[in-house]
Length: 275
Length: 275
Image (cartoon, rainbow over all chains, first blue to last red; front, top):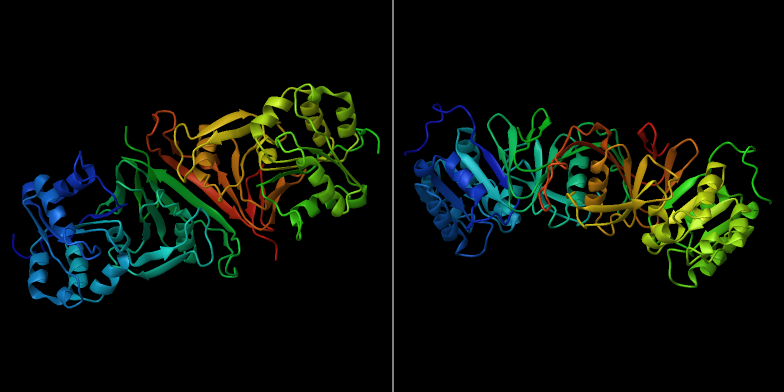
């Protein structure tokens, strides 16, 4: 497969945030589905292990994807902004039909990849039909507005979340991961209440949102995704609150989605698993 | 004040669940407001310390209420079902215009008071205008359906909550306490999704819901109350789920209320603190 012809495929690729700690060995349904979407033996997957500081992260995923039947899986060990300009990496990236961003520290992703040709290529390739999955930090970086950190707990607070600019593949959602495992509802509520234009997706470990080109999100995996839809927000005290104050937020809609359930990130309609 | 004339006051008294750990010494706004509602120097408050196994709990609250200006505060040290039949306690209870149920173990409350003349008198007195506040276990016991226990965490599960019959002062709400402090959203979601007829109130520590005879709940205190309104529930997988399964719940409405905000437990309308 050569570099992609953007004209050939006007639909964007799947965007697949994963909540971290996805199964890689025994029946890895999420990674297997990703390989399948990329075409199994026709899959050519670029792995971006930049968030991780472990040298083996990239090679490990190469093996996992090949074991799952992917035609090729190539890790691009980008660890500096200089490496993110490297022509050979860019060429490899452009020759792939799937991109996988590993976990680690999402601020490494934004500081090393932000504003580089690699980041630009990822956006363009996905718009042209290349599928992209990211786990943990690799999921957080997907939207326009990335959660960089925040407080633990069930309640929103005035300084409950910090943002950084993300890759910008989606702009109608804000993504949090390790969601129930790390007790992150409060920071997701904080995030969406700063500006209620986006839906919040709180993704549990070993759980993924397969968001198709039609903006329909389907849940795959063992956990659930908590969707916070603030579009009906009737009142928020966020603007007047001071640090440490309890907040008032009225009219939030919440869906909890488990495997097979779906949510349209454009129309905000949720559906159960079809019978 | 003699025993109450039920005909004289057709409005029920305030019902005031408190999330536990309410301030008792420095500016105890919740307990002070309770004393005020009971008429300050005209207040005659019966304290039911049955949930607690500490002998000093009752006398401690006697002192707190008197320090706050209550005319009288009398602890009724009911520790057995036999004592819950004792005529002198019943007479004292009937002579009061306020009842306070302390924290401890809510199963002590339901097993010791359930079905006794004391429990019946509490219901009748409140219906006739006597105000009732309860903290922690004393809050849990207030509604028809009491949360007796459950799992920690942000997500509902199939066996995520256990119920026991409560005092039955309110039947349109289910109450959980120490809410954010003990990470109890999941069990409250489990509780309301078993049967979505009731609103769930998740009350933080040092926070109270002052529910007036008009069914309007006002928040007082330092924390917040998370209201789960399941009346618009579009789908629940609870009935088919097996133990350990992730659930799907679609169309839950959530309000987070801090001091001054209100919620009508009948109409389910939430309002911000008035300007």
